[in-house]
Length: 102
Image: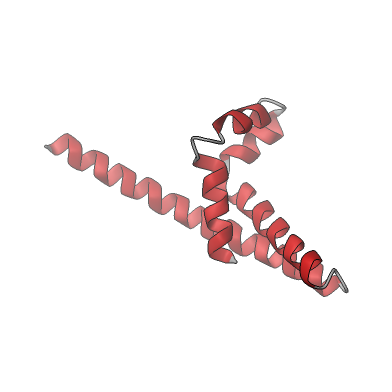
């Protein structure tokens, strides 16, 4: 589920197809602009809602433990999305530097 959350985060943040809805959401207020530009912010909520939906579909929210698991998955997706985003930026900078050398 973590890998799916990272993929969903990157799709929501970077995909060409979703650029118009993303731009509309970012234009609503400063908070939503921050949300759509931050991999950690978006990753947390993607992970949280993915686990929440999975819990509601399979057996429902039966205890506070289920809510804790949603928050935990949100944190895990958030931090891994952040590191994935940093890795992509480093790789992009490296490729750009190689292109300039040629």
